[in-house]
Amino acid sequence: MSEFESALTYTSYLAVDELLQLQRPLSTGPEHDEMLFIIIHQTYELWFKQIIHEFTEAQRALESGEIHRALAVLGRIRTIFKVCVSQIDILETMTPLQFNSFREYLAASSGFQSAQFRQVEALLGRRDTKMWSHLAPADQEKIQVHINNRSVWDCVLKHIAIAGYAVPAEYIDRDFSQHYQPSEEVRTLLLDIHRKDALISILFERLMDIDEGLQEWRYRHVKMVERTIGHKSGTGGSSGVDYLASTLFRPVFPELWKIRDSF
Image 1 (tube, rainbow, N blue to C red):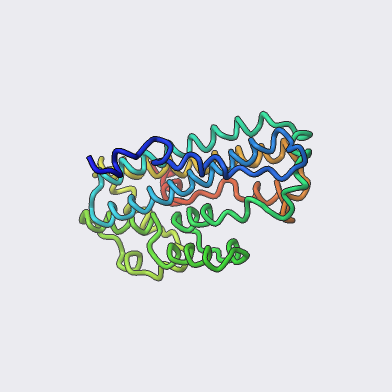
Image 2: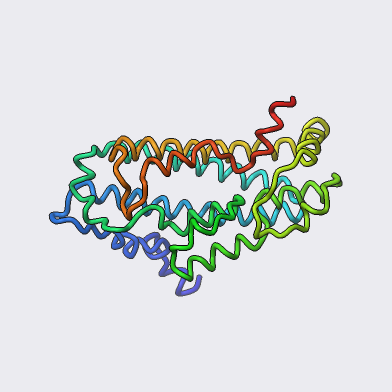
């Protein structure tokens, strides 16, 4: 055993001492509930980092034709989203009065500034640059990398093509920086695959799980914000609940939802 291995501990491997110094309340006292607010949101950023990590691996597996690997990774992402939803239960133990005791210290900071969540959206196909134009240049560059490459759905279509199905060429070699446009031709193909290929059908259902999980997280987030601040403007000048509500019921895999009408 090397000197490094013998010196390694749980604390040093996980950088626990450094981690526990990252919670820095700004309120006077500080207010008791500010610690919870900080830890919940730092935890979300850690989960976003892991989701990006997992989606990147799922894309690699799909483009390499490794469907069993892709299914395992997508299943993990689905479970992470369930944890993200459950964390809202903890945040909702904080009353509006408790949140307002330190809200003024947040100044212009806002969840809209989460560059990692914008990366998740880009991985899932969002190509709306106005949603991240306010971020730091380094963060914009990271998002742009995802925008210039295949989204998760683009990788699914490539996997289907690798499996021998006739995916129209314009969907395989398109300009990935542009928003994907659903089509009747692709939906017809998806229905045919559902009826003929049980394994790829499971892939579709795993994607539905993730889509539903993301929509559930958005809904719970909206209700948590409404419960805490009502319809007041959000921190950073955002429209708060009104904007968040506008994001509901917008699936990231619309064609998988649309074909439900045809079974």
